[in-house]
Amino acid sequence: MNLPKTADVIVVGSGITGAATAAAAAARGANVVLLEKEVGPAREGSGRAQGSLRVQGRHAAEFPLAQEALQLWTEAAEEGDFEMVTGGNLYFRTSEKELPVLQGLVKEAHKSGLTNVRLLDAEQTREIMPCATGPFLGAMWSPIDAQCQPEKGTAHFVGRAQRNGAHVAFGVKVTRLLESCGRISGVETTEGRIQAGAVVVAAGVWTPHLVATVGLKVPIMPVVMSELETEELKPLFAQTIRAFGFGARQRPNGKVVVSAGLNAKVAHGISLADFNGLRYWLPRGMSFRENLKVSLDVPRILQQIRHLSTFSTALVPQESPEPKCDRPLVRDSLDRLSNVIPAIRGARATRYWGGLVDMTPDGLPIIDGGAGPLGLTIITGLAGHGLALGPVLGEIASDLSLDAHTHRALESFRLARYTDGPIHRPAMMI
Ligand SMILES: Cc1cc2nc3c(=O)[nH]c(=O)nc-3n(C[C@H](O)[C@H](O)[C@H](O)COP(=O)(O)OP(=O)(O)OC[C@H]3O[C@@H](n4cnc5c(N)ncnc54)[C@H](O)[C@@H]3O)c2cc1C
Image 1 (tube, rainbow, N blue to C red):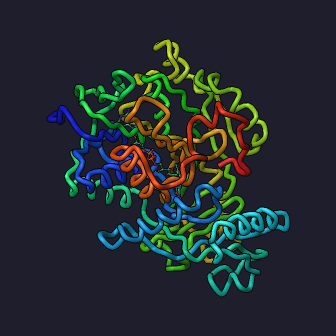
Image 2: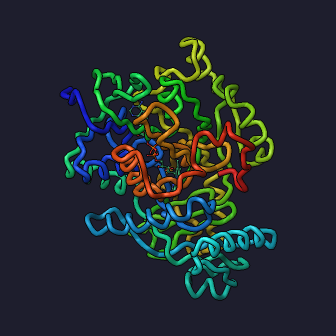
């Protein structure tokens, strides 16, 4: 493979974060190399997402990033088609006990300037979504949220990176970060070494393995989220839906993508790696035990024993196997969705899939340009809502790599927060 020997910026991972980073840094004239272990872009988290580009319903620290990211997604949609629709987002409420959660989310949104987020009764909701003729109590409405087809959206940013002059290489696994005198000096890959003064690790759930090669500990728990897609249905709704136990969006081709929604149940295979972060995960696992389905990942444990390591990059698969979808969970979500939108009842599921997400102990991402050797930027821990943030994360990583500074507030996302003081417990599992 004809890989460049040097670059200004090396980006690891062609998910939305890496793709947007390569596009942004190359747009500024930097010599960029984007390296991806899989045979194409968006084969992990980014290609398996539901596709909701949600601004509200987040931690306050994420609001400014989500707003800027939505603007960047909107601008990108003018350059190419990735099924971008700005239809707003509805959080359905089907029981009284869900009301305080939604009231809390509205309050948070208003504090951050999202004053168009509001609570609706059932009648007002039906004015926005006439097909919601089933029983429910009301909804939280945000008119600015959007959606897109995640693989196409990510591929769009990879294409933009290439058009801006970045060198994009698939099938190349980065096996080690190289460091010299406290500065990053490049990477070692399955195809040889590349030198660079700036490296961005946007490697999703595999980030802890790669940054461990320069001595950094990043607490990530990989968990599987599940989705299904129905056959093509007549056009019913243009909003994204998020609710307790179900979430959905309808693609322009009529297919409805269904997830388990707010506070979904996720699956985790326990391995020896879990003992490294027991102090983070035990409290979180206990308080969200209803939402966590655990099993013993025996093949992974055997691999870890064979390599005498839990974070060696030898444990990072060159081509990741398909994570197991929890079909009963998403079928149940389709059922719940059909209660609210009866026109969907009986729709045949034509595709099921699962995807790994990088969960952090406090539910906030890790976005840090100062945690390791100079020139290293890490972006991970985006959990179930990182697709929406992707384009702004690219701008941030590009700024940190080329200027060692960004004007966005990143204090809440520093890696050191896990060692500095008490860890904030998130309100939801995912
Ligand atoms: C089922 C599901 C539904 C979701 N729904 C939504 C949604 O509706 N809205 C939303 O905003 N978010 C959603 N998400 C979350 C979102 O998909 C992720 O937060 C986001 O895609 C993360 O992007 P990323 O680029 O950081 O990581 P990824 O997309 O995981 O990309 C990381 C890339 O790095 C590569 N890589 C790793 N290690 C190496 C290495 N050593 N060398 C070379 N390459 C490497 C991987 O192969 C991968 O391609 C969902 C996720 C899942 C799984």
